[in-house]
Length: 392
Ligand code: ADP
Image (tube, rainbow, N blue to C red; front, side, top):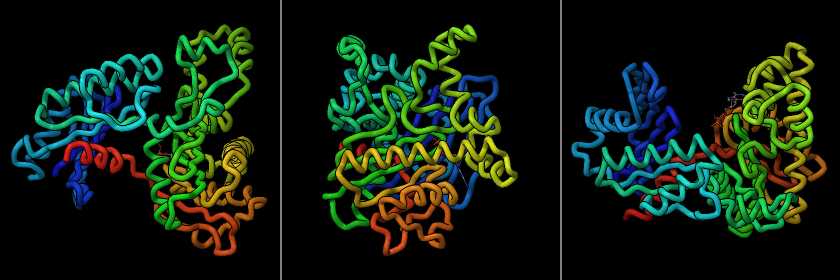
């Protein structure tokens, strides 16, 4: 059965097509700058990758080209071979704790939740409607970044602000990257050979979050009402003293919209280092003796350690810790810095094993009290699996 996992942004469409239940990737690709004067797309097959420049006025045209490419590359002969389309949705609020069929009710709730994730949820609805028009025979499902975190208890999801903000405006922690944390936890449980586990999963890419997962159920996560909470990220500040906002808004006449932009796009590693949001550039800066890069890395790592320590206490221990996403999978140095900072828990890094990128691997020694693993994440396969399970 052929299933598409798609992720629609306001000007992009990322996709991966699977043969299910074998979970074989048949083709993948990315459409970019949709709606701009000139757009482009890239298609990736087993041993081939090519890009084209083309005008893509909207997501519907992007889906039409996608179907043409599937036919041209002999992935499908006829449209009705595409049995399912699973969409990634950023914000599911407290409506969704699992993947559901994208019926009118689900779509209207996703639209309503656009107040919490304006760019993402609007784009997702555009994508769902476009896919429906172009591939009407496929069963569309929606998989939410927030769903896995719906098991978090009020003690961990409420903020100490006026309670009416919660009842009137739904102000609470929703988290993000849930599909990734769920995937990482399931891999860790397979590696440990049991499911009654206490896990801490670090999804650290340009966006970053840590989750505490007990017996496969999420008990806490570092992102909040929005993805700008918790860890220091590429350009996002994460946790800060909220009084800084009002203080700086008065000092520099900053509007709420500008402040939102500064905290999301000009802070984090970029804000501290003044060099870059990319941890590769930070590492290069450190090797050249740039003090602000040294500070940025120390702060970045410290925050991750703080959250791991907090979740260790929240769960009363930890059976395994995982590093995932761009930094977690690839930054040899950041993993070492984190593991060395966890020596109080009896974590002993295996420096040789850690000297790798993007492999699923144990990176602590056999004497380490807590094993740490690299787990390359795979959100798309989770979306495809959920779609398949609802479609079959
Ligand atoms: P996104 O949140 O956009 O999905 P990714 O998970 O792809 O982000 O992470 C991207 C980040 O991963 C980059 O900005 C960079 O900081 C980091 N990264 C990628 N490759 C490396 C590497 N070889 N060494 C260190 N950091 C890396």
